[in-house]
Length: 302
Image (cartoon, rainbow, N blue to C red; front, side):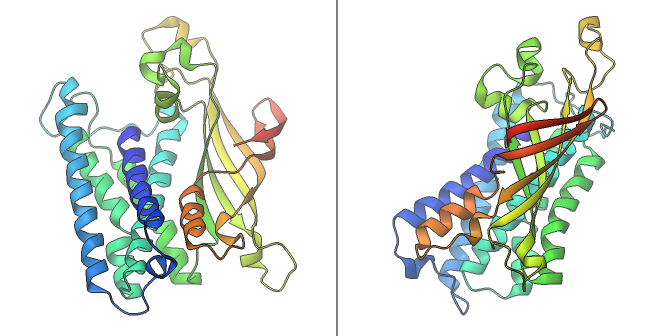
């Protein structure tokens, strides 16, 4: 349910940004001690937002498909595992922003990780349960594992380094495949971003300075490793439509540079809040792609 995952990230980010625009720097600064009013606001907002999203999905999204008894499915071999990378990315980002919001309210580091960083895993597990009652999908243990991995990437770095040296990021370039199967891959740009795995790239972005703190490497400079796929017109290579089976599908691996927006110098708390939101997106840079056919150079790649 990629649409649901992206919607909840966007809603959380918009909430942060709106608050930033209407408040002063002192308000945006994380509290040094527990601020119960802030904490309660964060908790109530997250519960209300999550509940409203789940109810909306149940009444609108799943209403278009036949309901069924709860069942599981094994979809680990579909979409060249691009959907699983989507789960990792979404769980990581939801956990990161959930933890940041609790940090803003001044809770302890332990509570920040237990109740904030696990927000993504909890929400996505609830969505997975809804999938389990839909005949179109099913509860996927592979998805749950990917959700746990995304949450684990965030929490493990906080425990090990007390900072995020490796960010999970997203990039998208419209592909030529969506028009061949718009029902599966989307019929508009907004749908394609969510559904067309051929145009998506998921990145692990490593901040070089954080690993070599005594060096003169710019604090904002990252090196990024990406993963993508091409030739996917349906989840599985086996399909009832013979035309779809003639297009070869293959994996893509990328090496590129990136920018850590959080390490750009600014005294504006508002800009810092905006950078925190958009840091989930890979900045375009010259990129090397490696696939089964060899190496390809891209002047700019997201």
